[in-house]
Image (cartoon, rainbow, N blue to C red; front, side, top):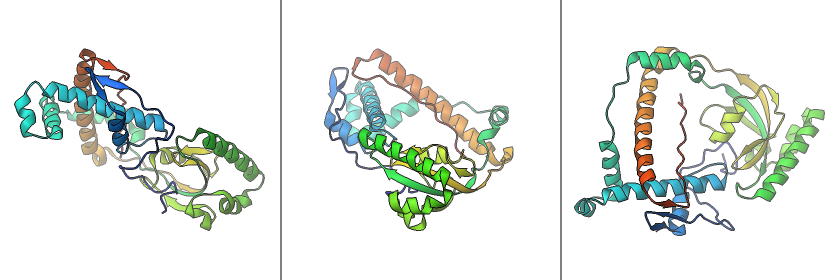
Length: 276
């Protein structure tokens, strides 16, 4: 699929347009993180809105600076290894291995069974009204137009293919907006998380993604099935271990931040969800 269409997953590294966007002024322990550093870091992060991408990039650089300041106590080490290796060694040294018990995994499964279902298989038609993440004016217009098109389709569903050819910026417009069958991992995350919850039929509201707004119609849906515990036991154990390690590292970094002189930025850690 063409990268202009929502069904293509965005690659981890991409260019970000910073025209007319003011980057934050940040310093850590008196050392300024330059706009150039932030601009270069942006390409390694992705989110719906440019503000969020900047937040993620800035946080990565602040954390890196905190860790390097901690490492600098041993100047000789800095001369013999690259920064990434030193940071990895520092973080690993702060982890205490704790065995995740079988009962803990089973209890997690019982308390979160909804997470352990295969995602539904969907057959979807859509109309993409394009708008860049940081173009507020165009996004407002696209959202308004999407609402108008949905209202028109409610009166006459048979117009979907015609309207897709007229308005959609996705190559699927040549097929009347049909994306075929979609399952997990075939679309960008923000689109996928919304369409899996839709019932069969025309979505009442437009769906927003980094590409713009989508008028969506689900023509068929095969619901996901509940997975049995033995099928996910290892994945749960790995997830709980990863979460435990991540929380320990976050606590360590937060402690460094609390002792540091950070200006222009505040760290914010987000909980990750388990994925099957």
